[in-house]
Amino acid sequence: MSELVVGKVLKPQGIRGEVKVLFYTDGAETFKAFKRVFIGGEEYKILSVRTSPEAAFLGLRGVPDRNAAELLRGKEVCVPREEAPEPEEGSYYIADLVGCAVVTEEGIFLGTLAEVRQAATDIYTLSAGGKETLFPVAKGVVLSVDVEKKEIVVSEKRFREVAVQ
Image 1 (spheres, rainbow, N blue to C red):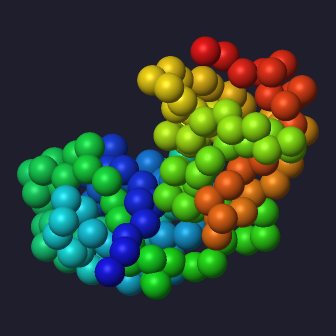
Image 2: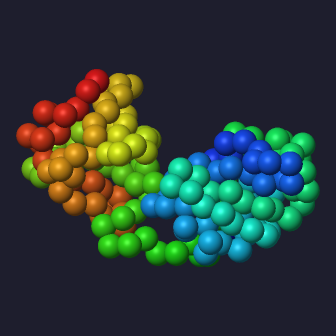
């Protein structure tokens, strides 16, 4: 069973075992589609979901109080890939992007996508030859994404304008 990382437990929320989760999805509402999650290798049935623009708040079976929720702090929240909804057109799961080759429109290899930092404009971290290059996914930088081929094509001109080493 392959899993997708969909968030990270930030902290306990309240005294009844609820956890506050930083979501790695397009929105916290996505968590309403999940029936179970895996945190630290353990399966938890989702009992309740509340959302805000910044986080999802999960009530989990087996997490009855704040002390139990505290033990989950900082751990990744995963779901079975087959239970995750398909991303909308033009959207991708970070897990599908990490490891993709980043090339120019002429096919010049720039590096391998090592990390995606979520912000107003996502920041991609490339790894090539032991060096890291960061670039925002600003307008005109990414031309196409092919997760089956594990390839991201960027505009070389725009990439050179915005990339930082």
